[in-house]
Length: 158
Image 1 (cartoon, rainbow, N blue to C red):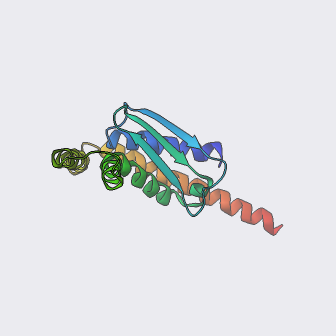
Image 2: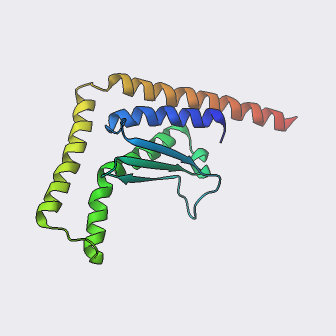
């Protein structure tokens, strides 16, 4: 993982923070030096009550092309909308948290509103600058990565 790779990912994260309305949350990116077991590219933790987010990026993440990296980040950002609901249900199943029907209804409404806001912003072009910026970032990173691979392949031939 190079500085350029990290810079590219940071720029994507900044744009996604706007889309997911978490740009004012306490946000930390942890760049791990070793992969987790399996094929984990990234993971995220979200503390709704403190509005604290930690995004973990593993070395395996950088073996993907730029578009796949973007999709991985989108997947992780979706968890900022779903983790609270998941945690409540796991707590209910384990008997460690009391969850009422009203709490489940409130969590479902919050989740629905979160996705509604994202989709509405996309459909009404409120995020056209962000969409263009992300597309440009991915295209430029792909172009630079391809040039670097071609140069490395030529050097290996000689």
